[in-house]
Image 1 (cartoon, helix red, strand yellow):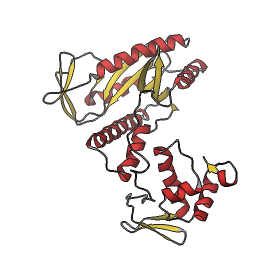
Image 2: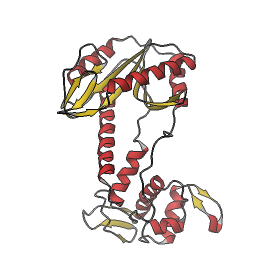
Image 3: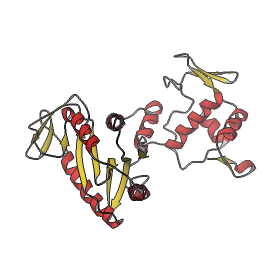
Image 4: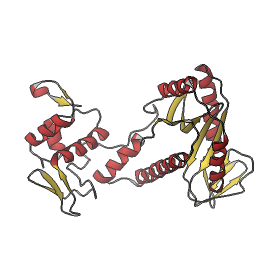
Length: 301
């Protein structure tokens, strides 16, 4: 049973929008690829866990803090007598493990995920004790990509290689798991501790003036769209949708990039590059958002 759903990281959502509205720097393009790949790996692991028939509580994407230290848990499973913690890695290609160091073949050193999971497990153990629980934790780094190879992989570590995933899932099936209100209370307590955003997360650098305005195609993201009647059409791929849906999508982009700015009719009209009339925008906002303020100070949220 999934107790906390997995959602795209805010930075990934922002970069996906920026990719169609600005020219991303090589660094930001690399960040986008990395974040997207990581999220896809986590979703793949979620789909594998769906095959389990025995009961467990699955808590995804926990961002926690203990004694001023922030740490992240990709996937946490609460079973009858044990907690399983997973760091999911979607690495692709050949890697080498040597003297407790990870190298992307041939010599590019990367952060050792075993150190990451050990740190997270230690902090989580202390946190759940502080919350009044005392369950053993079994932690793993799972390499989810079937095209991942690790040379010199040591035996009997917390690593789960691609060829070991099926046997690990079979092992999870054998674990007795009768859950009660105590297990659910632990899940709820951990979710209560979850931080919506890391205090150290850096927002991608951009300004309102730098970002391309306008309604983008919902299929190919082209900016070459036109309004005919109450429908927005893409000249590049032929995709179309009601103009109100286009306004809502475009406002969502605006909110992701500029959460500190208010949604108003005039602001949305400018953000949509004046393709939709203010009257049409007002109608779309009233039907799809809550309203605050009055008259000239009206805004939506």
